[in-house]
Every structure is written in structure tokens, then in C-alpha cells.
Image 1: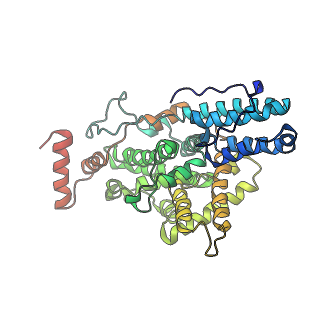
Image 2 (image 1 turned 90 degrees about the horizontal axis):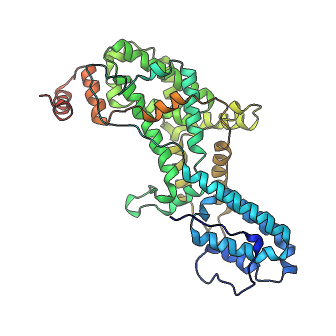
Image 3 (image 1 turned 90 degrees about the vertical axis):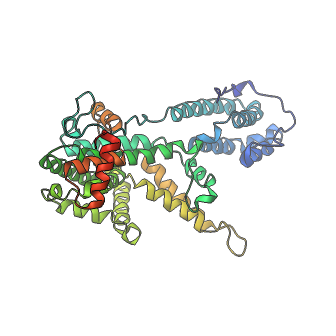
Length: 405
């Protein structure tokens, strides 16, 4: 898409015939109709129109990514600006703010560059290829804070309109599953970050050759997960638990025998999917209440388990009719949707109180991770297969990945 040009609304335009015969969306058409009236009447509702446009561009900036939409907006501006110099100045400022916001959204958060190509298992890889996480950050509290920093940075780029686009773009052949597209790329990137963190945790556990070291890594991640829970970072918490519950990790019985698992079981219980994640939802409500009464930025942090949030909003939208049997608008549905999306907007705007450590966040984004097959091979190399099925898979993976028979 070419660069969008923003004309200066203070120069004004002629009061020509309305151009909104096609396109532009119903809201812009409504604005066009409103301004097809004399300046004396425009001044009566001009302030409210400006407020509407300001809130619209602030909350849903991606509505104005297309040049045609920007053209409609500037035409609206050009029609009301000649009526009052104040209107022109305010709209000029509004367009500048919108341009800056779109530029910021276009940059997006740091990309995910991590590799998933399996590396050697029996010998420690060169430092230029891979370093263990504990060599970069050995303090679980610090890592939990850096994960929170990453989460808030990625959340900040997700606009509420991306939820709507996910619903609109759903694949009818995929049943009740939203489909991501060009206008939901930040949502998709955030889901990919969650998946990467899962695989990074599993990779770090399966990497060490000695079970004592693997047990140490597991206990480290348990402490990180617990601190994420205390902070209110439920998305990283769930990613860590999911990574530790992946089959290549959970099958390492000799390793787990050396781990103090009591704290892990408590965290698992908190994120148990039983009863539609009843325990997690209770903890989330507690964190949300703490955020409302908070006196510090740290107490305001609420980072929900994002995949479940998406599903909740999606099923609320799909499962409830837009209109009641009597034909009236189902305001209860839309109020609930507004509540959930509104909470998300509030949570994502919290400033992270933790100072960023570039070396740690860089590692989180770029450290090599194993593919699923790579994880299984690393797991079998660490603790031998226990049955014939595992032995056959081990042999196949050694052949396909390591070129050994």
C-alpha cells in the first residue's frame, strides 16, 4: 500500500455535491449527510462531530488505513473547516495524531526470528549457535518481569477492531474458528508469540544432557511461572505450563523424579481447563479487581490468557443473536461485548513498570527452538524410549534428522 497523504484541512474545500454515493462506510456517509447543511447549523453540532471523529480515530485507527477512507475523512473535514477556524485547527491536529498512530501500528513489535531447525543433542552446541537461558538470566523474578515486558509490548499493538475482523474473516468451512487475515496480523503475531514461548520452554528443558540440569531448568520455570501468576501475567504463565506439559517433556520421568513438583501442581490447578477454566477465571477477576484499586503500575498489570479471551469474545458474538425475537436490538449482547473488549483496552494500556533488559528479550525472541520432531528426538536422546512405539519413532527421527541408522 502506498503512503497515505493527509491534506491540510485548514485549506478547506468547496461546498460541492455530496460524493458519498458509494463506499466510505455508513458512519462516514452519516457524517457526509450531516455536513450538507449551512455553516450556521454546522456550528451547532460541530463540537460533537469533532468529538465523534476524535474518539473514532483514537479507538479504531485501522479503519483509516485505506486511502479511500482517508479521502472520505478529509472531505468531511474540508466541508466543516470553512465554517469555523477552530474546527480546522482541531481536525488538522486530529489527522496528524492519526498519521502518527498508524505509523506506529505499522511498525509492529519486534518480529519473531527464532529458528526451529533441530541442532545436535549429544554435545553442547557452540555458543554462537545456542546458549541456555539460565546462562542469560538465572533469576526467575527477572525473567518473569521481562516476559511481562514482552507481553505488554505486543498487546499494545492489538486494536479492538482486530477482534471484529477476526469474526468477519472466519472460514465457513472451519466451523466455529476465526480466521486471521491482513487486518488481524497483530492478533496472529501474538498467538505465534505464545506458541514460541511454549516451544522455547520445552527446548530449554530437553536441551541439557544431564537429568540434574534438566530438573534444575524445570524448577527454574516453575518459579518463573509462579512469579508470572503473582504479577498478573496469565498469558506467559499458561505458555510455560503448556510447554512443560508437552509430551516430549512430560515423558522425562527420571528428570521429573528429581523435581519438587508441589508448586507446579498448584499452578496447574490454577490454569486447569476443567469447568471452562473456572479457577483461572476466579484468579483473573481477582487481578482485575486489584487493578481497579491499584496504587502502583505493578498492581495494575492484567495480561489475560489471550487464546481464551479470543474464544470468549468469539462465542459471545456467534452464540447470541443480534436481535431479540421481538425484533429489538439485543443490547445485552453488545454491552457484554463492549465490556470485555473495553477491559482488554484498559489492560493493554498499562505502562510496564519493569526496566527492559535487551539481552534477555533478544534471547526470548531469537533463541533457536526445536520443532515437535526435534523435541521428541532430544527427549529420547535424554531418556531412552520405554516401549516399541517410542523405539520405532526414535529410530525414524535419528535417521531423518541426524542421518543415523
